[in-house]
Length: 177
Image 1: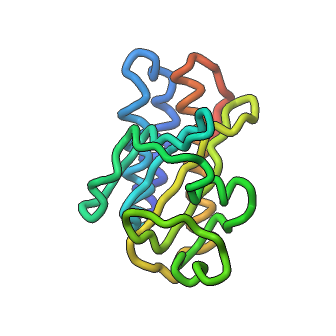
Image 2 (image 1 turned 45 degrees about the horizontal axis):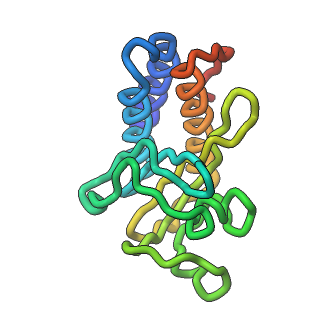
């Protein structure tokens, strides 16, 4: 079984399992999704953030050994985040190397050096943007591109569905493209 096949199988299992989220909680399903994405995309961090009162709050986080300081609950003002720049169009959803953009794009300064970065909105059933699903690496990655973006978008749809199901909102079945 290839890595992609394994990821597709695991995502299908997550789709099937969403019906019992209210009983067992959303944390394990969301953490499994983030781990799958982080490992498949070969990133150091994957997280789902929520936009609350002008802040970006990391609600669900999966990290590799090089980024252990990133944890759920970490928050920053929206204006100081890459998430906001992606949502409002100032930054592309896929950036192979943020360092290459620093000379031409206004980017916030971070405690760690983020290099490769991917970000997509997470939407709720009614179209509201909950936050973002982001992955980043501490190294540049010239291989990130459209395929990575499509996988992340699919995962963001699943994350939105998991959030809806956890809140008791029935959503129509979807397939993991």
